[in-house]
Each structure stands twice: as C-alpha cells, then as structure tokens.
Amino acid sequence: MRHLMSPLDLSVDELNTLLDLASDIEKHPDKYAHVCDDKRLATLFYEPSTRTRLSFEAAMMNLGGKVLGFSSADSSSATKGESVADTIRVVSCYADICAMRHPKEGAPLVASMASSIPVINAGDGGHQHPTQTLTDLLTIRSLKGRLDNLTIGLCGDLKFGRTVHSLIEALVRYTNVKFVLISPEELRIPSYIREDVLKKNNIEFQEVERLEDALPDLDILYMTRVQKERFFNEEDYVRMKDFYILDKQKMELAKEDMYILHPLPRVNEIATEVDADPRAAYFKQAQYGVYVRMALILTLLEVKLPC
Image (cartoon, rainbow, N blue to C red; front, side, top):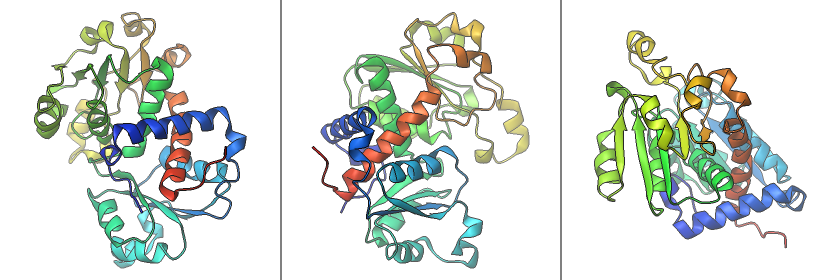
C-alpha cells in the first residue's frame, strides 16, 4: 500500500507513467467510467477548498466510485478533540482511499502512519500540495510538449505558497529547467528551498522584484495569490495583496507561446481581461486536475486498467 505525501514520493519514471495515464483518460474518458464502481473515496478537508475537494470528488465519480467525507473541521469530530490518527482509523473502515487537507504541516503524514487505506495529501499548511503539482506538470507537458528545457517564472507569494514549493521540488528533476523567482522581499522563497533544493541541485535561478523584467524570457508564468490566511496580521496582508497584477499591457512583453498558470483562486493578481488571451491556461489547468487525480486514484488503488 502506498500513500502520496509529496511529489517526490513518485520517481520520475512513475511520474511520467502517471501523466501518460492522465493523458489517456483525457482522450478516452468512457474507457474508465466504471473501473471504480465498487470503490469509495473519503475527502477529509479540515480547511476550506473548492477546486481540490470538488476535483477529487469529480475524479472518483468519473471512475464510477462513490464519495463520502466532510468539507470543514467544524463539521467533523475534530471539534470534539478527536485526533487525526483516530479519525483515519475510523474512516479506513468506511472507504478504500482518502484525500486529506489540513492546516497543520505533517497532519496527512500522521494520518498515513495510522491508516489501513492509501492517504493522499491534498494540502498541509504552507508545506506541500502534491496533487496540484501533478496537475501543474500535466498542464505544462500538455501545452509545451515537454517538462525539460523550460524557463519558468513563479510570481507572488513564494514564501507561503505550498504549490510553488512542491512544483520547484518536482521540476528540478528534469533537465535544463531554469527558474525566475518574482516576489517582494517579504515574500521571497524560503531559505530551505533556495539552499536545499535549488542550490544543492545546481539549478539556475534568479530572484527579481519586477514582473515586467522577467516576462520576455519565460516559457511558463506561474502566478499565485497573496494568501490572507497565512498572514499573522491584516496590515501586512493589505500592503502585499496587490503587489503584482498581470494585465493586458504586461502580456505584450511576453512570448507568443508563454502560458499562464495559476492554482486558483485568484483575487486581483490576474486581471479578468487576460482571460481572453489564448495563453491564459488556468481554467484548462483546473480541468487537467480532474484527469490527474483520476490517474492517481487508479494508481494507488492498483486498479486493473482497461485495455
């Protein structure tokens, strides 16, 4: 039995196999419509979510399976003081696989150690968000045809953005990937990512403050919102929240084949006028999230795949 806590839990070969399966699901959805008819997914979301929770539910239902769970800690026995370990022991009696989001870093890992079913980390605090990373990788590969030889700009909240941290850790395993880290001083990438991931792997990167300076060189621009829920005080959030706004005028600086990704939700960081640009791929990215989660469920459940 395997769990998924980090994108690094999958080797590059396993990752490529998973992405191939997700691509096949996209092309032939009917082929997979009943492969999980007798399976149940539990969604244990101790933190608010729209896309991640609904895409997991859509993924399981697209496979013919059923879904049970809760969408906030307030509607679970966590309000009574039940531990994550006890919750997953009970849920293991009801479901075949579990997706867990939790505000505390490491909570899904604790759950996996007590679980008798596969546990998927659906986001733990500011730490990891592996299924968003799988979604991002599938999106990039589908749009650009490769995951190597790319210059990727990461813009916005690079300090607290778990999607950014997970994506960097996954992409450093591919050849000739360069990063441009675009953020204000206060929201720069954490030192452990800079030192233990980028420098340790001899990855070329630069840190800049102006989005306009970075745009002409990018193959992918990964925008992120400034996350209000990660700030300790309202004043710092208000000062940072509109630091970057990607608009039509700035897009004129970018390559014709540079695609914009965003894990969503957006606030003000991408103007709605950009939505009509053919390079805006963030809503397509959300659709890819369903395919990749379908592939992951099948992989962890070791379901026999249709021919």
